[in-house]
Length: 333
Image (cartoon, rainbow, N blue to C red; front, side, top):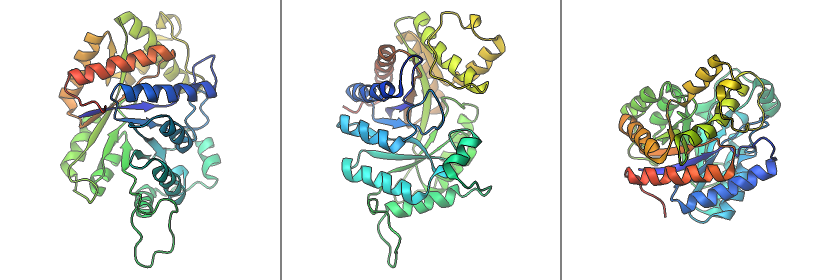
């Protein structure tokens, strides 16, 4: 089992998108030194607190600044794009950085419907995600006899494709296509156990994967003390509440007492999103991570942490990596 990193390039309150991007580059370099296997960036649009909207561009910037860690998308929201364009983008990345690029694909728009219309120009009620995935896989594979439409760059780069999801739909599709599957349990934990069971039970071996590979995303807010970890987590709770209230903004500054800033119902709703999480001191985090690993038996873990302070985020990633290695995960050094 390996451990990896999910990154939304958060824009902290009081900061800028440029500073957020610089922080993500520094985070990737640090994660590489700590043995993280992958650094994935998530596509979101029209979000004042997220700087990873031009996902392929940011992947290229981070790949330049690192040497070993795999860099990719977690994920590209494929309904927003032509499969040919994504094949060209990630084929270009593969030609520049070799076998360090991953392409995780999601089915959601990654934004609100008004922004989705601005991205796609013409909305369709038809779900073409499975067909689009197959089309994209074909562009990244070898040229077939008589094939006139090609992704250049892209042809025969065989960029590894992952299916991302938070329901049974993605689990079933990944299993049917014989692809690795990553579950977004860091924000939508409800169907994690069932999705993992369905994916593993119905998996069909393919040319790219002979056995299931199930990745579980989890939040890790680790610090020297429980109080400090909860303080850092308050930013994510406040940000979630603002998003659900229709007022997304930069990642809020942390607060000492959430109850002084949020209604108890909002706090409870937000905390329900963090059930697949480890929060506290190193020993506390180790116990919580061990429970998650025992319950879900993932083949890989992806760590997420929406932490306002850059140094605090690095410290959490350091503790998280150490805990995972102590529990038997393999570092990519």
